[in-house]
Length: 509
Image (cartoon, rainbow, N blue to C red; front, side):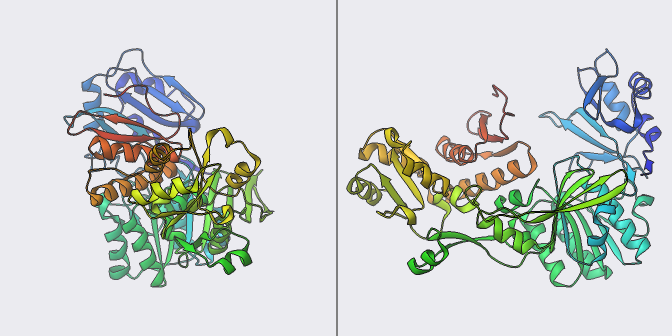
């Protein structure tokens, strides 16, 4: 692989003390330089970090950098003209810059050898993977290869100038591909449509799809016969299916209630999940690391298997000593874990939720359900139940464990009483008394969307300010997905922040 780091251009914008230290580090391992006000400057390398100076960063150091890069945009990002480096800012509550992250951008050739046949096929291709795994680098070379080697009309929709570099003239790394810049991140979907309508592309390349509007724009582009190559927030295809905002790009998910006969024929519960439509992207590639990917050649088949709770078939490709090796990944029909619908919130299902009381009074349960404003009913058939309510002392019984293994959420209660059942079911169904139902629904949808982002991107997401009753609802939704939450701010602007597991700070006021 050939590296074109243009590191000197990046080093030249650093404060003098940090500049001299960073030049002594191995250039091929340098990932980013971090300048935080009041802390020593730090260089982050692959697998380690290194302090660049003992003296803490001052406001003048930050100003020194900002004066030598392009102006910060609405997404708090800037760049250095005709380079691929990215500068991102941290701001305080007054909007003042108190930290900078200078990320090294590299033009790397030879990164799509593993995917070249897929790129040539004119099929729509979606790349998934954790941040920093090289998705944007591959998009950049895909643009160059399609434009230069295959002579196709390629438009790059470049929201943060990360694919084509900063400035009006795109970086040579994208070859003869044309680049459309996006004025604001929330306008990416509009520029995607504009590219199709105004410039007659054969291929459109998009980085970091993350909103429902962008998913809809992608479907519109695909329906017009334009090849679409994109990356999206999410590490795996399974993450994407669980993301309510982006699941449409792989067909979306519907909750379907089967007849008794059909459920018996399929050997499934009566409430199942099915793919709603044809996927926008024909092929999905999960990037495991820079030299290893998992290819799903038939997105529709892979999604269908995941919704049945089975392993997906695929093809694992890796680069070993410069050569591409491929091996088929065997699939199995054995369920691995509950599918997104059976593992999710019963309150978001279509139709009444069937609750099976294990070692509990069905009459008491029915009495509680009549009093609660939820669509649910008691059932004596454990196999057709959507969730199980069990006495805590009996929760370890073999039958309860078997039901849980087959995807039925099990909720335990301390005592066989209406008060205890009511308390647990109000939590399960996010029932809030004395609050407008539209506000509850809005808070639930916001929390579900945030959960999808946290799972897909691995970053904290702050929600809008809400009353304490609605914050409790949102907290329970996050807890069901094993995510951590904290409340921040003071009334009346107190709000919830949802964190990936293990990332929530101990105290935030």
